Length: 141
Image (cartoon, rainbow, N blue to C red):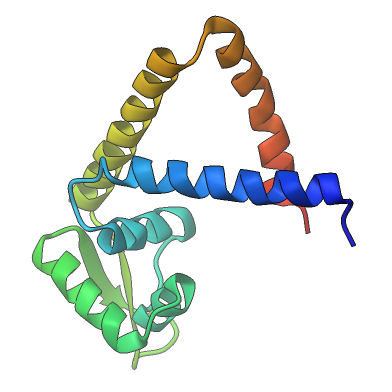
């Protein structure tokens, strides 16, 4: 059992990170689900639609629709699977990579402006030092 102090900090941290994440996502100009698919392909490389569905925790049918929309927009490409002729891989197109980068820059820009507007210099330094702590928590097994 975690110490009561750790449990309280954990609950507050989870809530605060959730609020911040939801607020930052409001800066997106395309639906979050589509941004999430582009991000997954950027992080993991080409995948089958089924692998993408598992990665995003959605039904394969839902992912097939999302993939179709992204293909119509020219944001992803499809190619034959190298070892299984029954499957195909989807990957980011150059336009998809560019759009994803724009979305990420928009999020980062909003966050940078919020940090400058809301935090004092001392608070900004404290926040910067805390990033490493959050990274360590994220890496915890």
